[in-house]
Image (cartoon, rainbow, N blue to C red; front, top):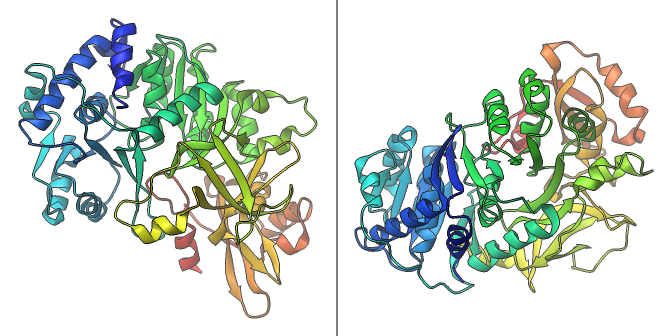
Amino acid sequence: MNIAHLLLGSAQEFRDLPALARGTSPHLTYRELWRKVSVMSTHLTGRFGLSRGDRVAFAMSNCVESIEVMYAIWHAGLCAVPMNAKLHAREFAFILENSGAKLCFVTPDLAETIAEAAKEASELKEIVDVTTRSYGFMAVGDPSPIADAEPTDLAWLFYTSGTTGRPKGAMLTHRNLLAMTLNYFADVDRPPPGGSIVHAAPISHGSGLWNFPMLARGSVQVFPESGKYEVPETVELMNRWPECSIFLAPTMVKRLIEHGSVADLKPDALRLITYGGAPMYVSDLKRALDVLGNKLMQLYGQGESPMTITHLSREYHWDRTHPRWEQRLASAGRADSCMEVRIVDEEGRPLPVGEVGEIIAKGDPVMAGYWNNPEATARSLRDGWLWTGDVGAFDEEGLLTLKDRSKDMIISGGSNIYPREIEDVLNLHAGVAECSVVGRPHPEWGEEVVAFVVTRGGQALPPAELDKLCLDNIARFKRPKDYKFIEALPKNNYGKILKTELRKLL
């Protein structure tokens, strides 16, 4: 059960459809991609001496070669270790050493950084720049048969973002990735052959994981020539390639709808935006629906259960006539078809509808554990359930509302306060560009609420206006006791706000 069989099937069914594109130009058809991948796998096992289960890392700006490299790795029975191109050299060094990667592919912009990081990676034998003759030579030779793989064999070693410490390597097996792929067709979409996906978000994470269902359906995978997310370029590619799907983080959706070039997007160009990594604020989501139409679908997942825990369908986004439309938009949707999801107390006992507790999930996409980290595995996987560390509650419709990470919850005067609820309200103010709420120690109440606010255009905002907005929408005890106006919120390489850094500022 090798995940590379998806490519074999598409090479047989969609032989002459474009499989990869560089910007507006086709790169390889499915038949050509299959041949190149099968020849490259011969080099991996022969020239580089890799054997089943060995880890192969890559640090690459988004490019067509990333797909070639990934499928060559799986075709040879090896494990891929994708690394975000924006990581620091020390982070690269940790992942290379921790994973025991023996080979690393790079794009030229990262070659020097990886060479420096490799000094601390004892198992790494060679670095291959995908723009050099060394890589080009890997397309020369005879194809090799696809390697056998067990469903439980490691396929993708997914390193968490590590916002609160060292990243952990979530072990994703061939079964995990196939279950995630099939769930896409059940709950997200079934794209037509000849459709497309634009990889604007990092290929090492969510966008890269979406490669599987798109490839299985004969879509062309399009990589911006810039190698990154630029709104005008992304709009151009959406217009160029038919039935376009794209995965974006909420901050990327916001950039899209606020950029002037979105007006150039053809009405029928975009098929679907799936967004994840964090829920979108309702105010931003309404604006996105007004600008883009019925094109949005939310997913809630983690690296430990890739792209699959719950989903909020396109239909629920668009049903403005429903009396609970806004509440639905504020939710993360229903449990995925392949998942069982519960809200539990600290002892793991299921909680009734409406009560807040930790979100746990079980299903075939859930990771096998953390690489070489039995202690972390034991904390996160208990009796087959993934303990997400996220806090939420189900409503009477079976919709899950995320409150916050359990560590971000504020306890003031014995009451639980969820920062996201306050952030949703502050974002209603036209002068607020971004905000984030954290707790600050208080001698009497335990903690008090503090809001960090980025204003639009750097304009001054009277705290009294924000106070009134909060008092008009939420309980008085949840109102921030202090507002800190800053130029930008600290974020990690995936666009997630670093509340740990905000707490340090306090």
